[in-house]
Structures are given as structure tokens and as C-alpha cells.
Length: 160
Image (cartoon, rainbow, N blue to C red; front, side, top):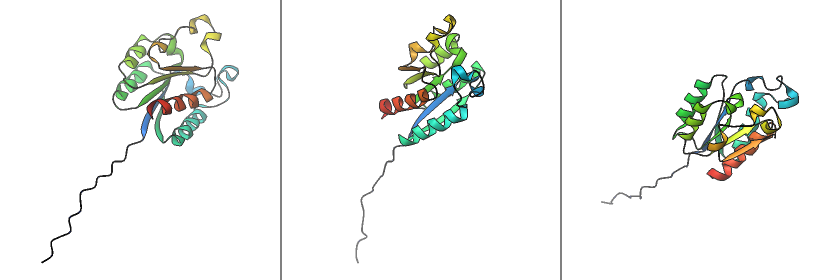
């Protein structure tokens, strides 16, 4: 009688794609129509599409979200703890006012990129201070929608 052919157990490990959370704060849902001379003509959907295309190029997956509510943004940051490989945040007006978003971001162990469509330092004085900058590994400002693309590319380099 022939003995059965025994093959060694082969395990193929496929690394999951890196996951990036992109958070957008208040009024960014109005991009394209709200002060286009400051924020440009791209809509938030245009920005999301740009981020998806850039992430796909780098074999990354994104979760793109927007809320006008500080608590929801904080909930999303807390959900991201140990669940994402990087965070891009445009906290909009909360950049200059939210210690709570700052504290939530401090709990993350992944890299954080702060993004602003305009350059807050060239605008009203109250926009010159950021609660996000101290916890961010990079800050991209004044590049319009392209700033988001730069942020995805930065995270692709840091994570991969």
C-alpha cells in the first residue's frame, strides 16, 4: 500500500492594505461654494476622489469623513485607536479652539497629518494658533486640495 503524499503546510500571509482615516471638520461640507477665493472651487467630493486615487496608487485604503460636530470628530478619533495606520485631519475652526480634539489625537500611536486648504497664518490672528500642530508629525497648509494629496503621500512614505 502506498502512503499518502504529505505536503508541508503552506501559509500565505497577505498584508492588509494600510488604512488611513481622513477627518474633516465644520463647514468643509460646503467646499466649492463657501468662500472659494480662500478655499478654492474643489468640493469635498473632489477632495475625497483625489484622496482615494492617491491612496489606491500607494495601495492604501482610506476612510473619509466630515462632521460639523466636535463630539462626533472625537468619537471617530477614539474609534481609530489601534485601528488605523495614519490620520489626516482638517479640523477647520476646531483647529483653533478644541483642546478636546487635541487630547483625543494624543491617544493615537499612528502618525497624524494636519491639513489646511488655506494658510491660517496669513489670515486673521485668531487662526494663527493650532491645538492640532503639537500632536501632528506634519502640517500641510495653503496648498488647496493638493494638500490632502501631499498628506496621503507623506503617510505612504512614513507607513510603508
